[in-house]
Length: 222
Image 1 (spheres, rainbow, N blue to C red):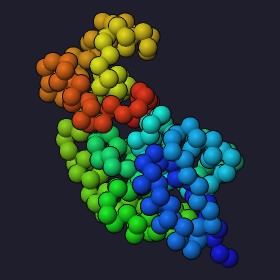
Image 2: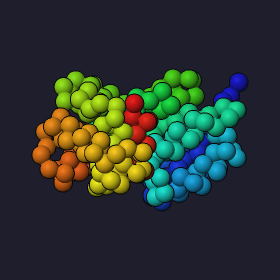
Image 3: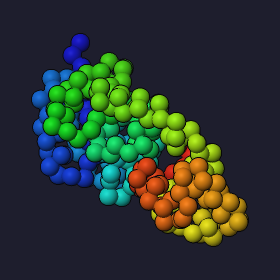
Image 4: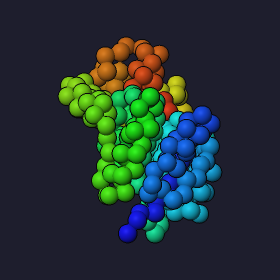
């Protein structure tokens, strides 16, 4: 029996949206391709259309892509397969691509058209798809002794997105129901672990690592 796949792409860049849409329509098994330019409209379409696969960017104008992925995974009766297409190659993105809700990860490169066809075939068959360069990046991160997920505690991971946005201890405490002194203590411990000495340096480190994207959703990092 011929597969009849429906694909929804959530991508705010019109050039990538057009390019990927055309490439997806060339795949014989793909019956329908729809597009959304932001997370909110993408979620609405996903709920309405129940696509087989969602091709999603991690940088969306209204939400972080991983927030959208978490919401897509809650769709019923059957959540779609998630294929990420992004330019993000920071440590947080590489780490989180191993989430069980993520079925494939592609970088926005010149050979993405070939990878798209292969990824769609693999996801349709119930498998995952990570190109060699993506697997190498994950292996390198996993082998790094100072990788953030190895050195930071669960609470420090929870706070890091707020540190990346420059929130002060009192602001973070009010948001999370903690005392400012408790937040300050965790900030100091995190700074010591990542090898910085001042809050601006911590902000820079956290942004470079990838904690500064979207709203703070620390639980998804665990």
